[in-house]
Image (cartoon, rainbow, N blue to C red):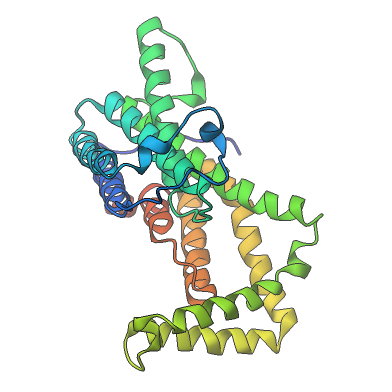
Length: 292
């Protein structure tokens, strides 16, 4: 079997553009307006060489959001796409770097940053190949948008694969045996969520989710062998994500597996990654293909 670039219709590509534009607007709308006035505690990435204190300005954050909304709309409308992608990539990378340099360990926006960066590079590669007549083979689709989508799929597969691989490397190959420790972390997270207004109320969706997670964690804590099997399944799904590059049917199966992984993490570990699920749904599952 060889790597195959799916043949997307114009309608599918348009829906993908709209989907990504929605995720971008949703992500930038959550940017915190009020920032700490102190310097960055643990500079990482570009923050080590570039002073990002300007990002702490409330006005800068607001105008960054406005620019992102305009860029997302331009991208969804297929207008000024290279410039829109470049702006969104830089803005989100700077935002993630700023938060990480101030101690944040939230990885909720990393996949979107990888996709935006991949699409920016894909558009540059497509335009260069079209301008100078390069034959880059399987790297390019039959259009600029198809190439951007294809590179997005590869970026998603790379993010999940490296996530699984890093688990094995950082534990010396013993991640499955140590994975049950996540249950203790989940207990601690539940106790923290119980102290929130929604979690402390006896009724409501949040309180029900906490009770369900508590029951599931308790059951797995009494069956550690089963817990290891559950976490092993998640690891296998991450490591197997690149097989989605072998064809559309395999891509959909891999996408459904990744969404199931996130749903499981949300129910059991209370780790919601809705943007990740949306992006996998858009590029891996691609529901409009069922209507062909």
